[in-house]
Image (cartoon, rainbow, N blue to C red; front, side, top):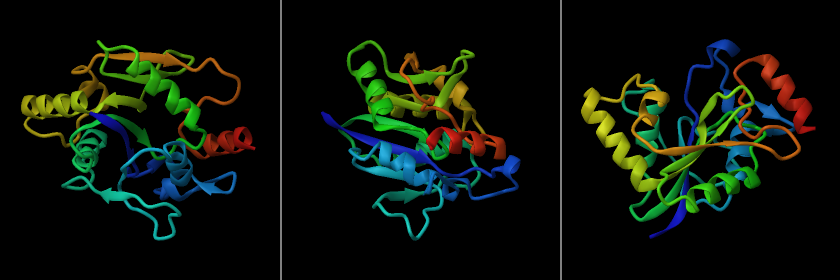
Length: 200
């Protein structure tokens, strides 16, 4: 086994931003989706779950959850279906993380690789909140957890990431390096302004 994939969740209604197409909003001159994909430039495949802009500068695989609007767990399952068997690790990321870097992904990946009893690693913010869509997972463990969770619930529509993570053993990682937090997501216009200041 080997290899590294990335699944980027680019759906969601962005209600707090007036229904904007969040992944295409620019921060420091680049769409947020493009910035996230750049942080996982070495992933193969890079899967986007949601709408892919026609001018996206990199090649990705794309899909949507069925039915649409199923939420992050259903979207995770849809994206993971395009990751080939045998890929050891998968980054699971939101598309609105404009400050994410390759270094931040490397930290998560190394954390999982060097902890054989753990199935994944996610960032934890300064207030102790788990950043469920900024993590790296053992692909086989994530598949198994999704299958168990779906069997338990009957379907994945509307399920929360926190409930899925109850089926997984993982490490919560604090970002202790200088610079902006890589897990910072943009849910409001104020968040966008903050990200723009940090990115510049």
